[in-house]
Amino acid sequence: MDKTSLAFQAAVSAAAAGAKVAYICTHPFKRLPAQIHGMRVPESAIMNNVDFLYLEETRELLAWFASIHTKSNLPSYIVIEDLLTYATQMNDTNVEKSLAKICATIADAVAWISSHNEVKRCQVLMTAPTRITSLYPILSKFHYRTASYQGPGEDAPFSQLHYESDDASITVKFHRQNDCLMMTDVSASKQLPVYS
Image (spheres, rainbow, N blue to C red):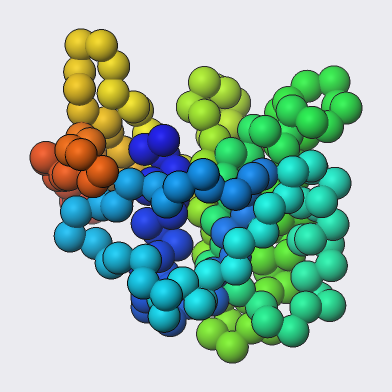
């Protein structure tokens, strides 16, 4: 649930900044995800910039991306909830091969969108469980950056989101309080260049 709240908040924040957002998931929300304290609220004026696409099957997802050149209202931000669900529906011999096929289709479509939409760029946020250890190498082949999410456990009531690049890292710890997510700690570091 927290992963969905973070992805939904990213869509709301992008839409509030004026981005046209395509939010792709397999089924409608039963209720709105938990709000993140201090972040933009999903007001109707903001949500007019979000197009929800309920694509239950992989073939629907691939068809949407393959036909992007026929659409007139191109997004500048795309959220894809649970990439693994789509990958496991394919009849490939392994899930890594399926993930690579899906990522290749997405990368091609995003490149086309970036050269044809109003802002000349398109950002993608995909969620997937971290139990697939080969996910990071596959995504890096397509130059996608990854962030890991760890939900609350029995011994730790906090969730954690971590992102690391070659030159910086950031970790955000948060917890649920009523129907809201509250940040409890943010730590960041920047790698200093090494000169020889």
